[in-house]
Amino acid sequence: MQERLRKMTREQDDELERLLGELNGVSRERKVDLLTRIVTRLIEQRKAFHQESEAVRLRILDMQNPPAPLPRATAPLLPPAPPIEKPASSQPAETPSAASEQGYLPQQQ
Image: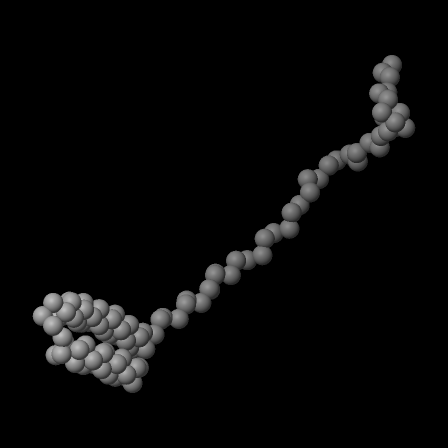
C-alpha cells in the first residue's frame, strides 16, 4: 500500500520536474500555456492523492473493525402438532348404486 503511494508520488514529482524544465526555456506566450498545464496537473494529482488516501483509510478501518458475524438462526422449538382426527360418524357411508355410478339418478318410489 505504502509502496504504491510512494511510487505514485515519485512519478508525479518527475512529471512536474519535466514540465518545470520545459518552462525555463520557452517564450513568454508559451510559458502561460505551460503554467496552465502545470496548475491543472497539480490539481489532478491532488485529487488522485485524496482519493487514494481515502481508499487506504477505509481499508484500514475495515481491518480494524471487521464486520460482525451474522446472528445464528435460533428459532424456538415448537411442540409437535397434534394428529388430525377425523370426525366420527355413527353410520358408514352408503355405497353408490350402479345407476348413480353410471350417471343415472335413482328413481324414488
